[in-house]
Length: 219
Image 1 (cartoon, one colour):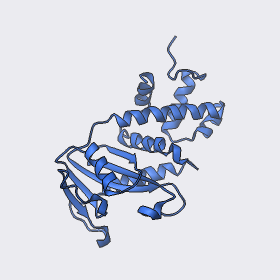
Image 2 (image 1 turned 90 degrees about the vertical axis):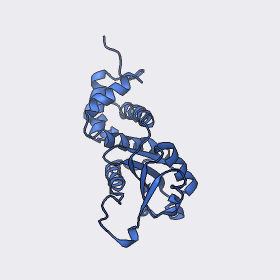
Image 3 (image 1 turned 120 degrees about the vertical axis):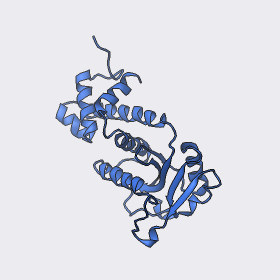
Image 4 (image 1 turned 180 degrees about the horizontal axis):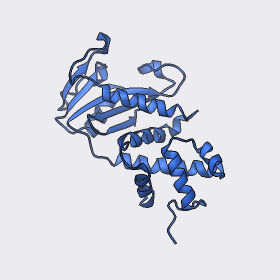
C-alpha cells in the first residue's frame, strides 16, 4: 500500500491529488470541496499544508545575482496603495527579481532604508547590478557593494534599454490578479498566499503537479 502524501489526513491520495490539481488551477478550497463532495475544512487543511510546504521551499532558494530588479508594493486593503503611512491598511511586500530568472518576495515590517537594504544584502549576491525606482529607501546600495541604477517614473514611460524594472512590476500585476480570486485573506495568512504566487511564477513553465507531490512526499 502506498504511503499517504499528507500524514494524518483522512483523505485518500486520489482525493489529495485532485485537490492539488485544483490548487494549481487557483480554484478556492471551498469550491474544490464542493466539486469533490468532501468537507470544506478538509480541503482547506490540504491547501494550507501545500502552501506551508511550498513556502519552505521558496525560502530555501539560493540568493539572486547578475542583473536584478527590486521594488516594493502593497497588497490587500480597500484603498489604492501608497508608500509609507498612506498604506497603513495594506500589507507591504518587497520583491527581488533576477532578470530572465526567479523572483523572491518578503512581507516587510516597513519600507525604511534600513529594512530594504538589509533584505537586499541578504538575498542578492555582492557586486550584482541592481535596478530600482527613485524611492529614497534605496539610497546607499552602492556602499553595500552593488552597482545601482535608478528609474525615474515621474518622467513618464521612457524606453531606456536595460534601465527599467518592468520585470518585478509585471510580477506584482501577476500576483495581484491571481489573489483577487481569494476574498478576505487575513493579514496573518498573507505570507502563505504571497509565497504561493512566488512559487507558481517561478515554476510557471514546469510540471507543478509533479513538483508539489514531490515536496509533500519529502516534507
